Length: 241
Image 1: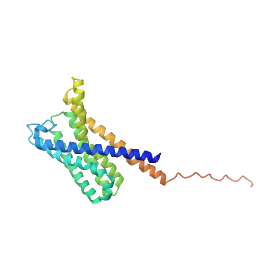
Image 2: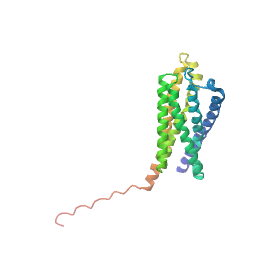
Image 3: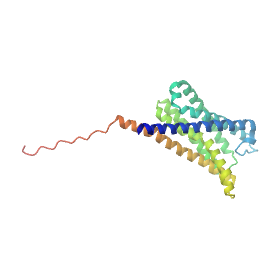
């Protein structure tokens, strides 16, 4: 039964990883290609014509963000980490640098955004959490805390993958919800999609951390430390014996 359950969990893990990798590669190539080749017209975010550096900030955010999106899934494949540790380290450094550059640029892009206060707050929180989880991932691996590093990297990549989730929610909202509810406006769908991409991704990441990292560690620790059998204290000798 245990072997079967492990096999099922392994298949689910590889299915999830394949979905993650295909989505990241597909989104990264198409969106970045469109952004570079199409310019401002290809931008999902409305560009303020009065701010000359607005589109530049989108590019500075989108290009390294796309690099991080493409590299992330391969950092979670254990055989690659074990067989090619030097490559894992190099890719990890490139990933973290890309995240820092993209997150800093997103602060400015959110500040000059025309999309409204609600989505600005969402992007501010996303950028801050993006930087914080990246810093924690770097700090823990510098200390040799591999498991904690893995946990923080899962959290960080969940925030990186919010770019894909945002598009999925936005396409669903504009293609399904808006035709079904004509009173809905694009701005409402966009704001809801932005918040949902953060909240849903964080929840999925925390569930995955518990199921794939914390729970197996606790189970292994319990097997290594069998519960101590309680010992009964000897009964006091009867008086006069």
